[in-house]
Amino acid sequence: MNIRSLSRGDGVVIGAAVVLFIASFLDYTDTFDANAWDSLGLLMSIYLAGVIAATLIVVSRALPGRKVAGLDLGQFGVALAVFSLWTAFWTILDISDAGAGLILGLLATLVLAAGAVASPLVPALKAPLLSAPKPQVAQPYGGQPGQPGTGGYGYPGAQQQPYGGQPGQPAPGQSGGYGFPGGQQGQPQQAQAAPAPQAAAAAPAGDFAPFWFAVPVARPLYAEDGSPTPIAELAPGTWYLAVDQRGAALVAQTQDGRRGVLQDTTGIQRG
Image (cartoon, rainbow, N blue to C red):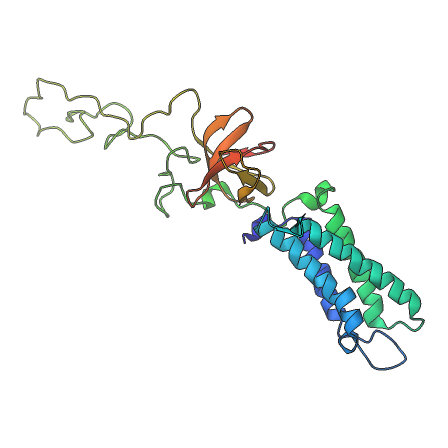
């Protein structure tokens, strides 16, 4: 999974799950020396339930559209996180001498459930966990690494050059054909001018020109046949090629060659 597809809300969920797992090794009561691993009911209903909830929420980012019992993985994880908080709340009310493990577990499940529920709703939590890299860091589509300025078709900074030619007028002493130098000094130039060079890539049909873009947050890519199940997920910090436009949607191509329809194009960054 691309770590750049994670949001800040996912980071909160992961952090809370780590704290919850640590709390399972602390004493849940001050009366005797015992932690959650000595009580199967507490372990499964509070601590491991919260850790599994966080895992499902994060995995749902990597496998969009997967379902368990008719529920999306992310939705199932949110429900499990709320269940973990509910159990921890009533357990700590029932135990008068709650220890550090139970108190810390209640706080961790509270943060876990809040992060899981609020992540899709609060804009600050929907922002990417890691900032997107600079565009020039990404490799050109179809270009060679380590050669700045030679990007592929439509890549940011790419320039269309004639086949073997140089931009501008040919220098004196050159024939002007395909960028090859002309004859030696003192030799007559060819009477018949060389044909004009052909462009390396033909212009696309219609008014649409392919371009590179990046998404501000992770967004699903749907099949071109209109299927409601996503075929991929576009991650922030990665450049994708838009090859066609369908109304407000874009037909995008991923780096592994898959093509699909990006329905939500708001806030995208063009290269």
